[in-house]
Length: 212
Image 1 (cartoon, helix red, strand yellow):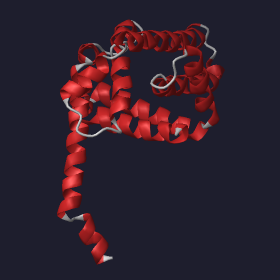
Image 2: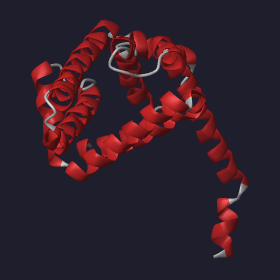
Image 3: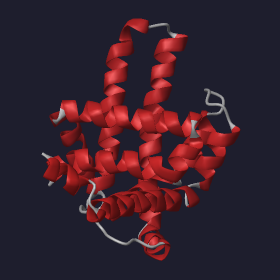
Image 4: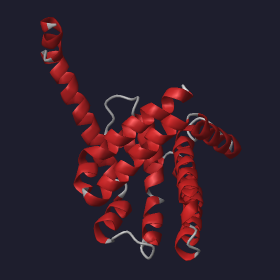
């Protein structure tokens, strides 16, 4: 027992932990720098149906970042130059993926708003919320399949399949995403410095485990 404790606090273990923290902070800052529109919108606007358009447009610049972020978790010693090169590679296609995902999620949110607020069909809330959860997590899976599949049809098909097939994992990923968004909205500095890499690192491990 004491030997195990000694190993945990050994210089090598402490050095490894410090290195991991440094990498997470570094990657989070890289993402923040390349997601300035999203950062500014979170700082300036209070989220509402009137300001949603600003959040949607700003998130278009986040999607290429997320694709890049999910590429670097299995790499070591990523520099700003390396991250920038990965981000620029196929940027237009990544941005187009962002347009598609934002359009789909925006349509779902608009439909939910109409049914809940305008038509007062509150009994539909559980069904709408669960459907939105699967669609959002399917969007996250698409970020992973986007890196390996050349066909948009294959990306969508596999993303939807994994989202529905592993329901409990989907719930965990969705809750982590909501936590990331909440912290980014109320405690922006935490995500800027550490949260981006931490939350998306966990999401990446959860999602990629079944894929691999």
